[in-house]
Image (cartoon, rainbow, N blue to C red; front, side, top):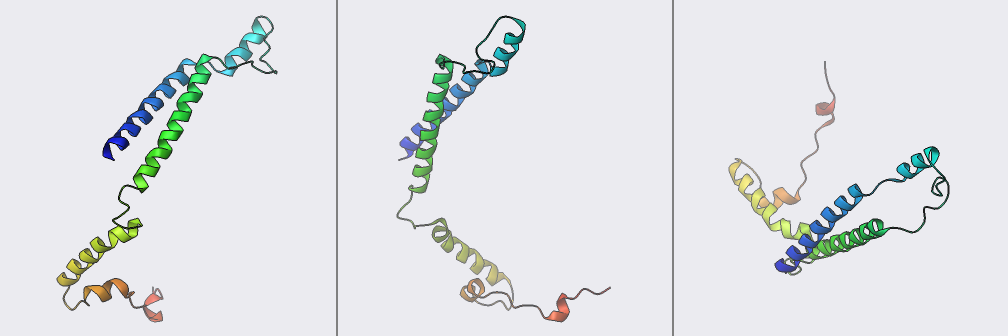
Length: 133
């Protein structure tokens, strides 16, 4: 499973770098519009720009690969440890209860760990909440 995750991550990084390079090499639509005012008639000022060239199609393919690899990494991350618990909170609960038990033993007169985790703090009285000058 670790090999598959690493392979998908490498594919995602390569597609991202290729997509960045392809976008930087292409010229924008503004360059065609500026050229049409100064020299000759270009059909791309207000009309269609025509068919996509090789760079734009390659960029679209890289974007598709990047999207699919991102979905694959998300799937692999959520299904890595399916047997350990069905959610992150269930996997973190034993560690949180152990940490609260360790803290409760250091406080003199503290309640046991189970009641400290499940019992909310007592509400303060109304007189304690009113600010005085």
